[in-house]
Amino acid sequence: MTAPPPEPTVRTVDLHKTYSSPRGDVPAVQGLDLAVAPGEFFGLLGPNGAGKSTTIGMLTTLVVPTSGRAEVCGFDVAAHPVEVKRRIGVASQNNTLDNDLTGAENLEFRGRYFGLNAKDARRRADELLDMFGMGDRRDGKPFELSGGQARRLMICRALMHRPEVLFLDEPTAGLDPQTRVNLWEVLRDLQQQGQTILLTTHYMEEAEALCDRVAVVDHGKLLASGTVADLKAEAGADTVITVGYDGPVPEGVAALRERAGVERVEVTDGQVRVFARAPEGVLGELVAVGSAAGVGVTDASQLRPSLETVFLTLTGREYRE
Ligand SMILES: Nc1ncnc2c1ncn2[C@@H]1O[C@H](COP(=O)(O)OP(=O)(O)OP(=O)(O)O)[C@@H](O)[C@H]1O
Ligand SMILES: [Mg+2]
Image 1 (cartoon, rainbow, N blue to C red):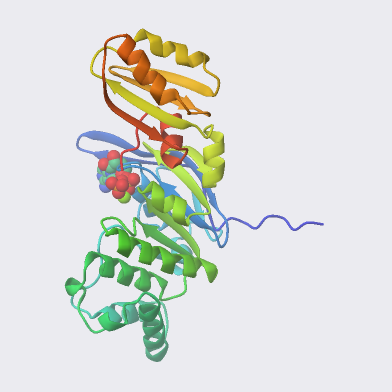
Image 2: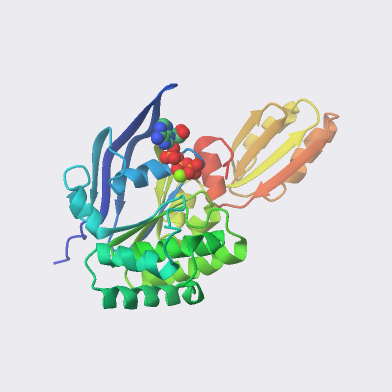
């Protein structure tokens, strides 16, 4: 007999959040279904305003769902917020460190709040500061930290009570590439030690580098979810060739639809986009069709199958990082 699959650590069912604002209702999350397995590194990927922080807010009991369900470690977030809070660590998108306390004190204070004695809190804080390369910052104040250091300190603080699940809302937003890659390494180590992690990001590259599975969201809705490989396969694993012309798109581009290995040709004003399984020669043909019609090419790009082309294929829109 095979064991039944483990209960998800995080689950949402038809989750909705509509904010009321003076300008009217804002449907931030519109029917989200997610499941994150124990030990999984899960990414919520979407552009600005997609509803990522709102989703994290609901899962961490800070935002009240309008309808639907959200459960963390088997507890409904609305019915059992205290049980949920005990089991989660959160590093929010904005800096919430206490500037009156040192780095170590920020952590120890959190540890004490969760019931660690002074000695254990200190030991745990030192262990985390070391793990995140922040040992030399233990006695400094948060306002002296760089953006990347502050992020790391917030993640340390979120881990003080050994939460079952760690929520990271855009942990690397605004960091330089090297700092970002360093943080990725620490996060990978954490997962290897068994930590379940749900991260939001608007960087496709980050989702691809870290996450076992990814949910792509936009306008509060799930566009697709699965492993990055699944998503690429689902969207057709197409290469996307885009060409802009300095005049009307030549009629001749329609002929590309008949070409072997071309899945789809989309024409918008001044631009043609070809989704191709076999992209070889497509770009050259688009240029040739242009010159035959007396129009020049102003820009051209060829994107290999990636989360970016998945997004393009699913929405017809370019991903706005
Ligand atoms: N407290 C609020 N009141 C009204 N509208 C809100 C509130 N918080 C968020 N919104 C709106 O809800 C939508 C989703 O916002 P959310 O912050 O969840 O997106 P996000 O994916 O985290 O974006 P970002 O990548 O910019 O952090 C946006 O249209 C936003 O303007
Ligand atoms: Mg956000």
